[in-house]
Length: 177
Image (tube, rainbow, N blue to C red; front, top):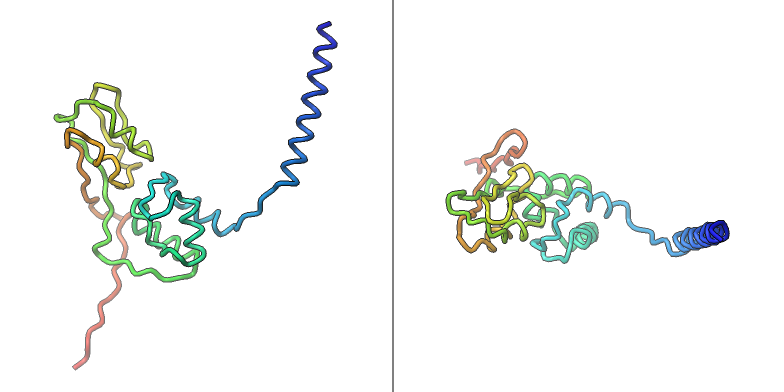
């Protein structure tokens, strides 16, 4: 009895595996490798700050030219320059393009947990009813967490430029007299 049940399930598993393998071949969807490459560069938080539902849709519109490479605020200037390089377009970066990071005033944090639930990048850590903190290397400055903090102890601050975030500004044209 046990042997016949075992044989039945092995045969059934083999048939279902074959059917799934065949379906994967028949229903395979080809995608643009350029869209895949740009989607892999994007933060992947699906925050919607670019005006699209997710990073995949934003990558598709960047490739088609409907969105500019600098449309992703959490990605910052370095992402915009990388995407522009891949697409072969130029993007104007100004000194006003700043990167931001969330900072929690830990003395005012009650540990309600709303901020880490709102963060799509899992940059906020802490336990319920205990103090929370931000992992600054992961935080993209998308500002979604600051909108959910009821104690107003979470602020967004500018990141001071360093060798990883700073870029050379374009020279200003001077009129010759």
